[in-house]
Length: 370
Image (cartoon, rainbow, N blue to C red; front, side, top):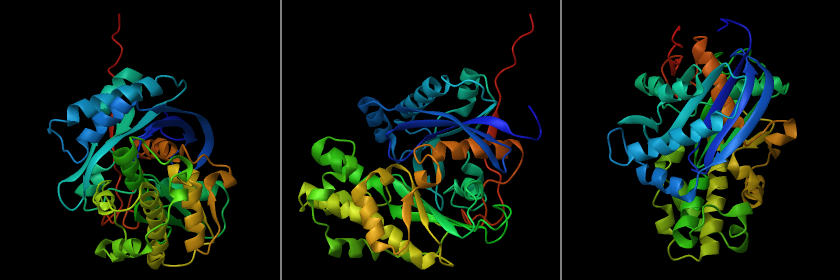
């Protein structure tokens, strides 16, 4: 494999929303983005979702982990095998537990197994090194966000807001030459986003999501409850900082006295309020916020963001990017950085005390010579 120049990398992401696997090709040298390739999505079936959900909060060796890992590995193998032309794969796996100040971080799925199936060098276990070094291990997309800001030729500071199960934001100064440059980035989780709404829909209605915010649109948000949640000391803690998907798992139970519509409206508004609250940690103003992740498809959530934040807030599609595939592309980009021994996180993105190059590389067994 070439030691420099661009590579076609295939990245994959299975996020905290538990909806399925995204995969995308990216042409990059690990520094600049030189082209976007094909992408695809493979949803989890309800049974697969239930298997993964049963393992949330569990650690290696716990009983529900092996069945969840098998689901994750099978889904990735099925999806990634459809692609041709990749020289390298980046496999994030499925986060089951995240406790950077305690037991660490746990993404299930064996990248070495995937390397054999795909017959490609595969980079995986991206977060452990960062946590071991004292970082939060998340978010990991910010170095890619810096490359995106330069790709779209941004000239003013801007933010990338990812609304998945948990929200996270990256502040980017595109005038800095590299993501390693001090002041180039600041990244942190904003708080719960889609996960509580998804959990509410599953618990009350047996549905996986509030599609297009249809239920929330019929309800009235409980502002007093939202302010109570925002009073949690986590929101005042200085970044970088991160959350587990279930860090605020009691939110759904706390709304048991509200109607389905009012509860959905409250949790949707809460996701936006968390982002608005996060502005207290911005070191300088940004010109705009570009939104990626599933939350940008929810018009109620987007309207709440615009109501609470006096900035242009737009889906990343307005600048020619694909918000459904941004995280998969990010792990393609990071895979090349790992291969080239470039850092993937640092003090301003995860709080690690120094720049960290995460990830391990598994290579397929050589073909026997006849």
